[in-house]
View (cartoon, rainbow, N blue to C red):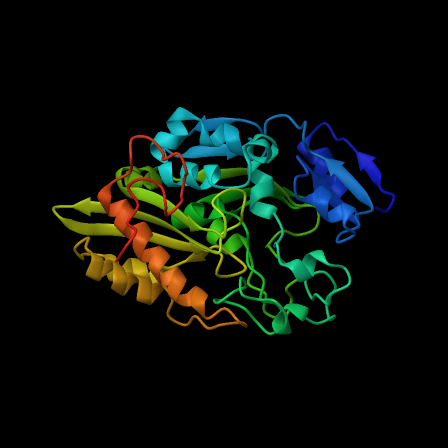
Length: 350
């Protein structure tokens, strides 16, 4: 690990000013950043510690019925908040399906949004990686790539975004609040992460020095609470990132779907909002045939980036399963294995 300066600002303004200097990185819990530093993947010259900044650790109900979540709120704290889990159950289910209990107790909301890909070639400084070293190439293209992207990838990068939390947030129109040298701005989470294109090193819309200060869910998102689920398929049930995942939320009136939300995880370098599938479900009956058609629409345009054609069909099935579980209704209590297809009540066939 290289030598670095350590700065502990006392206000957001001080933090932004310090982090605007070249070579700076924000430090909160550090559950991802410190691993990358130890492995020599990233070498910041300056760490700006935001873990004690005031005003970023609250969960606040807004006058319009929405919810504002400070960037320093811990994942476990948010998932176990009774009001939050009641209003946004699919988000709570996604949070509880990620990492271990110990990591959820430490990791923050803001850090979850900004975690880096788990592509093995990105983590290996001896491998060529355009994300880590622009212009170096992408060893994943001809390497072990069965878990890589099938949507939105480019010849420059085929990595995927690892977050569970972000998948239902994108479906529910979450908004990110950002503070920076130019002041405060807001960005829809759906637009916050970037697809790789020719510049995979640019992972989000953040400019140098900008800090995520909060996440906001609109009041309308709570309307989906009776029919909202998150389903995650992983290579082992605990402590693994998603091979593919899906968040589904439905508003059902008079036996038909009045409104649908669907997003996918593990398929692209950003959480993937399946808007074509949502449109296909509007006015449809909540049955297996409708869900199969929606799943087909969700993966339209998908193509393998290597030895991973199976992920396309797998993502279709997980999308259909998430929709079926959502249609059956949000359980009063989360299953013992949150988001697992093997949890009680899961649709195991069809």
